[in-house]
Image 1 (cartoon, helix red, strand yellow):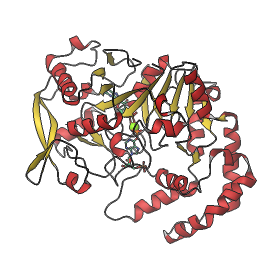
Image 2 (cartoon, rainbow, N blue to C red):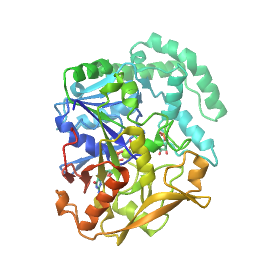
Image 3 (tube, protein in one colour):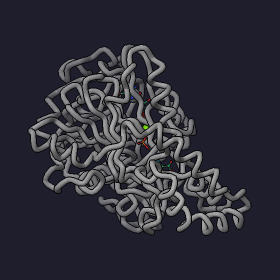
Image 4 (cartoon, helix red, strand yellow):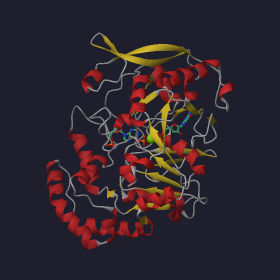
Length: 430
Ligand code: GDP
Ligand code: IMO
Ligand code: MG
């Protein structure tokens, strides 16, 4: 199989970074194709923790390329900050040869960040709870054909022309929101200086990935966020501003649709959500707090406590329907250890009727009361387990239950944050 896509099957933070790092061992290229530094992907290797926001999660494997395609929105300050922080480590002296950034990718400008924050602050009820990184405003400009793109940062005159199409409007809006406007000359100076630092890694990532695939190389596509945060298919309007489903690999990198190979869904053994929006299985009780504490459920990007709840099977089936998962990776099974029983949501009671599919109507989802089935818990520590047969019977039954309910095999199970704390039942590369 030439390519594998890693997709968050829930509301993000499923453990995609860990899985990408694991699979990257056999990849030639790891590519990001959507989202931006709203993502926070955590890798734990040899006890050392690395949180990546823009740099793809294959970066710790020093022999492979990590590229950022044109579907990603890129904040150069954040990106360069991440590069500097990693290069300060002895183990990664030559990062720039590993990295490629598409010249067509849209730039998150300082005014995007200011707009994102100011708009959220202004909303009283109905806040989205964005990460405040400028993601939504940057994608708006892509659709409106007024984005600054990475290649524009290499030419002060061109950047000036781009700014002339947008800056007055941005500044008027910012002033209306009570925020200081931005100065054209200062923006050009700051952004072209960043562009010069990026120059050695700016390239045509689409051409690179197409050539790799044509040459039969292994390419790993790293999704950010999760299916239920997709701008078209998620719990709108409480979503991010990009398409997070596997279909966006082709558009985000510039590949033929058939290049999207095996699709792997990453799902937590329970569910979490950061930010606002419907979350039917949310637990506002001691069990929810237990999951948060045991699972370390605090945002990798913003540090916010994540909302925690039971696994939602109709939502997972919906994610499968949109992505066609060939396999699931079930992460954080270890976090459920110690619970007498484990609940799984099998449907929703809405206006007295039980629905076994995720309702499309947001208002219905808000009022949905989950219908649960109760499974037996287990108390044994499973963090050292490496084969499925060595898991406690109740844990195996839980995994089988998920496979039956979704129709997708669970091929890898996470039993801890470390790269090796993983139970591999079959090769995800297919
Ligand atoms: P991502 O955004 O999907 O890459 O996920 P995050 O990195 O934001 O959040 C997942 C968190 O769970 C990180 O702190 C990981 O180190 C951790 N993690 C991943 N897999 C496992 C697992 O199987 N067990 C435990 N206990 N932690 C895990
Ligand atoms: P990873 O890749 C979890 C959420 C935010 C908010 C909504 C919109 O680590 O799984 P945005 O800043 O994108 O406009 O915020 O989306 N969100 C995430 N939640 N994991 C993420 O990324 C997220 N990226 C955005 O919390 O609810
Ligand atoms: Mg995350």
